[in-house]
Structures are given as structure tokens and as C-alpha cells.
Length: 463
Image (tube, rainbow, N blue to C red; front, top):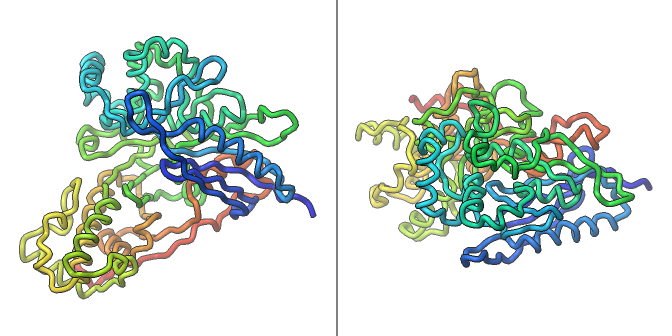
């Protein structure tokens, strides 16, 4: 029996590190997951154990190569963003993989923005809110100012996906999905590195940019597989949708953060949008993706605990609660009676945070109110990036796509849109594999990897 052609994808999250093998139909034929114990940087702050991560890549590759039932055609990587690995001329890391949540020195931050035109100007040009260490360009600036001896020895600062790829290909490069991910490095108005990057000569520490579908030979003799450039995970998760759907759409990716991504809105970010937590990603074809976000998944975790405790219920009860249109109708009437707008302005928290639970007769009613408030907040956030590009479809993936109350309410709030719950196993990993499809796969692009469930607008609920 001949070996099955496969692609290996390393999907590295903050918590779980996964390896997948996909066949040519993008079915998972092997998977493994691991967690590493964090280590600490020189300031005592927790950070990724880079050596454990490096060794796990090689150990995992060795394991799958021993399996004669698979023929590895390609390898690619996706990881979380805002993380640099600083390597010397021999490819050795020079510093820890600093945590993007590490506190940024206030004095250095003030010095930077005072020198280069202020927070608003930098944010507007780079399509990124001011986020401290989450702006990975600021990490490199900090390294130059605070650790000049190490900085001098840096050959390249590689974003984490490109570092993992370098381990296998031996070639240093940068990709647009990492550079364009709230780094404050890239000037979206000029489609080039921002002037501050060139004035500080930081661009000399950044490897050449290659397209996201570029592949390289393996560094290891005797292996014929191709090695992809690596991708930022948020951009990778969008790829299956971009490949399968060509009419304008919006993707709401739900998890701890609920991120609305509009790859069809090319208008520059305004200061007002930036102040409301909008930003731009770069998709794998190196064009901007306008995005907005709310912390709704985290809020959901907190508020269902509050509801469950108040009504003496188990939090698991709300996981599959059925949608009741009559409850929603009644809640909307009461909101109208209080002159509470159904369609509010964008906000960082839902209205439910300040609601008195004693006003709701049952936990079922309280939970419907909570989901109505979350859906209203989502509506306002999504409208920020809707644009006027003829978007008619909204896809929702992640946790809330399985919440019937949320999905029905979203369809109600967007009566002129087709609203779908989308499900796909391992969207980020599949997107990472699809980005280099033509380099390893002999079959046509698949058109059946996304399952859609349509939610019709409930006309009984007049807006």
C-alpha cells in the first residue's frame, strides 16, 4: 500500500501546541497536542519556553517521519502574534521569547511617541491601537534602547511563525501577516515600513519579506518536502473563507475575544475607529483586513457564573439553552419602555454588567437578556467595520456559533444579512495548509470543508 501524501502543520497557541497531518482532502489523519511549562525572563516575568518549543518541533517531525504510512509533502506553521525571536548570525536565540503581556516601560513609551509624532499619528498610519508589548515593533525598539549589546548581535528579529519555519528551512524571512498584525511596524498608508522603523534602522534587523504562499526546500538532506513561510494565526483562520467565498462577507471569530474581520473594507482606519478598538490585520494575500473586537467571550464566562450563583444553578445549564422568541419579545418591550436603545453605540462591556438580576423572574429570562446585550454589543462592534462594500453575509465561527440564542439574536439584529454559523475542524491549521496548497497538493482546492447553518431573521420581532 502506497504512503498517503500529507502536509504537517504546527499550530502554536499560547496554551496548546498542536501538530496536525492533513491528507489532500484536508482531513486530519494524525494529531498531537502538548503543553509546556512556562519559564521566566530576566525580570522574573513568565514567558514561553523557547528551547522546549524548538525541541518539540524536531521531536514531532522525527516521530511523523518514522510513520511509513505517510509521505510528507510540505510543512507549515501558524502561531500567535506579537512575539519576536532574536537570532544571531548562527541562528541562536539571543534573548527569551518575551511575553506580549509584559509591561512596557512608561518612560520609554513616552519618549518614543514624543519623538515620532504622537500616539494618534502612529496608530492611524500603522492601523494599530497603542498596546505596549502587543505592538511587537515596540519590543524591538525597547531592545535597541535597553539592551544595545544584545541588539548589536542580532542578525534578524523573526516573528515566531518565521522562526519555527527557519528551524526547518534554514532560511530567514518575514511575512506580511505577522508584520501587519498590530505591530506598529507597517505603514498601511504607504504599504511599507513606517518611517520610524527606517530612522531607527530597525528594518535592517528584519528579514526580507516573502509572499505567504512561498515555500523553501528543507535544510535536511534527503528530504523532499517543502517548507512554508509560516502565518499569524488570526490571518490563517480567515484563509478557508477567502478561498471558498468570493462575494463580500464578514467573519466574526468568537472566543475569549470576538473579532469581526472584513477583508473587503479597504478604507483607512479613522482615529474614531482606533479609539473604539478597531485595527487592521493583513491577510495572506497582503491586503488589509479591517477588524473590530470585543471581550465578549471573557464576559460570558464571568456573567454566567453570576447568573448561576444568583439562581442557584449549574453554569453548564447555559451551554445548550434553547432560544425563546417570546422571552426576547418581552425583553425588547421592556427596554423600549425604559427608552433603552436596541441598537446601541459601541462599548467595551455589555449593558448586562450593570443589570440587577433580581429584576428577572428566572435564570432563563436573565440569560436571554444577557445574550441580547452581548448580541447588541456585537452588532455595534461589527457595524464599525461593515463599510459600504456590499457585504451580505456574516459567518460566525468559534464558541458563540454553537449558541442558538446568540445566533438567532444576531440574525434578528442584522435583518438584511444572511447570518450563518460556520463550523470547521481546526480552521487555523487548515488555513495554514491551504496557503501553500499548490506547492504540495495534487487535488483541486476543496469546497466542502466549511459546514454552514443558516439562521433566518425572526420576523416576529420587529426592530
